[in-house]
Length: 222
Ligand code: SF4
Ligand code: SF4
Image (cartoon, rainbow, N blue to C red; front, side, top):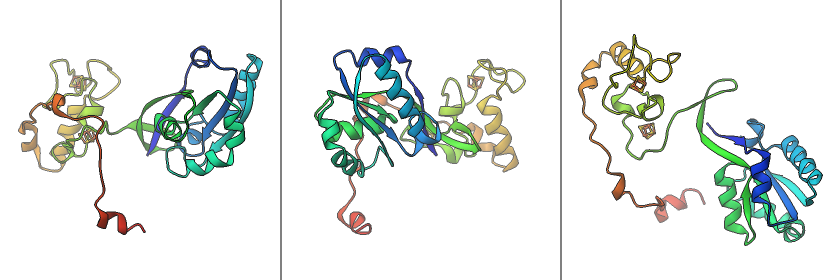
């Protein structure tokens, strides 16, 4: 499972950096390295490009996993170079950006767009598998998520456009409900195609969603 990112257009990166002239660049040694959007090479390339655009680079680092709490150690190790910058440019997913923002008072700016959480189906091929909807129905859909597999995110069967099992939006792809039907049939659970999923009331979901571990749940990790 990886967070899928892509680099923002260079013009947009420059636009974000408009107010500053000294930049510290941060990459991520996990997802962004695998995706080649924020590893050592990409950080080095972006550094050179920014210098070519007249910006002073005070330093750079590739944090092992930019979204986790070990980021605090990297921030301390690079304190002088970070303090010398007036903008921190992050080549990591939005979680990495927010993790750095948590530790720093300075402007922390994303160099990447975060697209989705992807499941690696075969080497180098990542498929969006879950949109964290908060009400999982995989148990009724043979393990295929209609929220991500259907272009319209439908829950209760196909739209009227399904054609010979293909999706009306993308003829190259099977309709999500063709996949679900076939899989349920194999499992002799076709009755689940009739199961009704009521619409979610998104208005009553408080944001941001929070999960607080109980003391005993915390203790198992100590
Ligand atoms: S239904 Fe789909 S989007 Fe919702 S939690 Fe399950 S896998 Fe994730
Ligand atoms: S054809 Fe199927 S996958 Fe495509 S939008 Fe309609 S229901 Fe969703």
